[in-house]
Image (tube, rainbow, N blue to C red; front, side):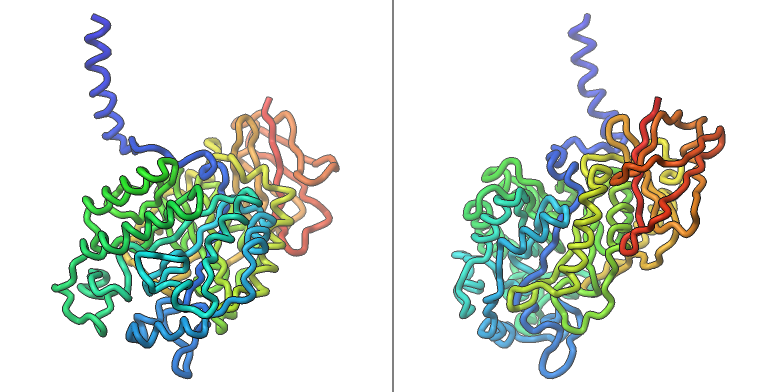
Length: 465
């Protein structure tokens, strides 16, 4: 009798889980879900041109080969000037570590098809085509290990403007294809590209640089479900613990990605990737840099909703980083040294009415963003700085983030005694006693009299009775 019940319960459980939309595939590893904060690096031939082409500022940022319709033979000549003698893998990894980041994602191959590592599958790569003739990924692998960072690779999956066999269908047929070199879209054999370039290069990336945390795919385009599955199987046959993002396509990723947005329909296992300025790759015309305060607000916004933040830096063609990027990371790192415990290993706080109230509106924004795909320059993150607050939770502790306050006190209904009976409330990084009064309907909190001029965001640790 008991065996019969158990036997019938297993398929029923599977059905119930499917009905509520749970993902039965393996979840991302704890290093990812707990780490919360990563560095994105867009570095390639487009870094060398730095936003200019043929005597004028380019359109499309790092996608300018497409927007300017540059033939492969002409674009490839950029490699003749690519000599990043200022590249310092140790310094790159140290800056990420000191900013509080836990993983590093770098472009191994972007849409232009140029491999930023030593690829035997294609001689269109940094070692074979540039006067520098070195493989930066080897040094990065060593540096990431030294600083405790997970090394991860970005790989453009369904776009490759060097290869003749890559059709696309967004926003229309051939909309993101190289049609000036390869005009016959119907003659393109996507499977030939997958077998002869994608799979061999993924095998190289997974066997030449030690453990890889994530294969971070972009733009699946016309990749079929069969191809996505084969690629996933290949990755896991070499490195079973490697995480794969949703842009492998066809619903086979381990976590969801939103681009240039802080909103996701997911409540866990998602990542927002954003820029510090307008462009992903280095562009000398960039002037709209986000402040450290705004970037920390972005981090809190994403983490309080159960996600990770992947923050981009676009290194220059000489291998150095823009000063603005370095200054931002330094300021973020100082804030994280004091407040990181409220970020790492946290989850969404179930008692936050604010989170529940904003979720529906946020979801509408996310669906709108999904319905109107963009690329290149597409920053949709909020730029306005307002006084507000957010929450995270770790175990029995609740963390309150008071962001950019404009008053000496703040009322927080979500922390009323009817919701949470507070035993203690402390300000991270301060030994001073916090003044607070908890009533039945709200918590009144007195804020620090000495403000942080650069990042006025204060984090309180709350313990309940």
